[in-house]
Image 1 (cartoon, rainbow, N blue to C red):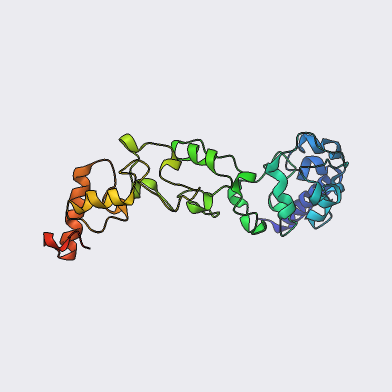
Image 2: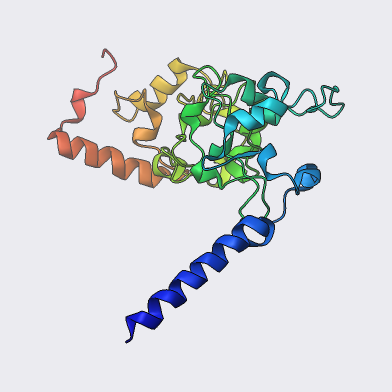
Length: 258
C-alpha cells in the first residue's frame, strides 16, 4: 500500500472530523436529546459541561441545591407534590451527581440501580430502604411491609444486591397449609430475626413442655429444629435422627425432673 496516498487521506479525514466536532457538536458528540426538564439548555452545552473535563457535579449543584432536592425547584419554588423517595439526597456523604444521573436520553437518564453505591448514603439513612424503594408485593413481603414502622430489609438482604437474600424462609420453615399466615403471627415486635409458636400452639411454655415431655423430648425451645413444616411425621423423623446423631437411644434420659 502506498503510504504517500494513505497518510494524506487519514489526515484529511481527521481534519474533517475535527471541523465537524467544532461546528456541529450537537450531531457529532451529543449522546442523545436532553431530558425534558433541561430541553431549554440544548444549545448551551457549557451550562453542564466543562471543556476537556466533561460534566461535573459542581455544575449540577450550582442549580440544584442538595438541601432543596425533593423540596424546592431549581428556581427555589416549593414543590407541592413532595416525595420522600428523593429526600435521601440530603444525607449523601459525597456530592457526586454524575455517579447516578445523566441528562441525556441516549444514555439512561438514571443509571441502572446496580451501578449505584449505597456507601454514598449516610450510615443513619442506609437502613431506611423504604425512603427510596417500594415494598415488594409478593406473598412473603406483603404483611411485613404493612406492619413495620421502619424498613427492616437488612435482616434478609444486603445493599450489594437484592437477590439472593441472606435468608430463605423455606430453608428453615415451610409456609404450608395452616402456616401460611400473616408474618406477625410468628414474628412479634417487628423482629423477624426471632419467632414464637405459642400464638397458635399450646399458647404457653408450660403447655409446650408438657406436650414434649410426654414424648420424652427435653430440648424443645427451638421449634424449627424438628418442626420444618406441618408434617408431624417429618418432625418425628428429624427428632429420631438427632437422637441417633448424638448416640442417644435411652428413653429414660428424658424425664420430668429435667
